[in-house]
Image 1 (spheres, one colour):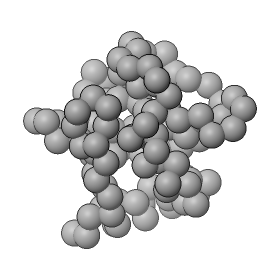
Image 2: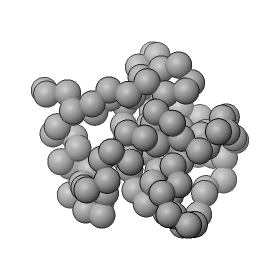
Image 3: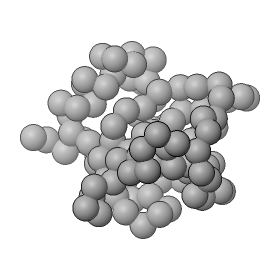
Length: 102
């Protein structure tokens, strides 16, 4: 498996994804295909990080790129390792505990 990227988050752990997984993700969310740099930015320098209200191992990294528009990188941390679950654009921040603010 070819590593596509690995980004260190402000929470002190890295999130990675592979080329194959990125292709699957962008097939499901084609609008994110050209926004890979913004997904990386969301992980590295987010505006806000929240813990998922449904799964405490899942974190949502929000990066504002337009007025009332965010790129969200969703990552899961397992045994200290982080991996990208999905990424998408949204116009609303989901509920969840705020872990980090810019």
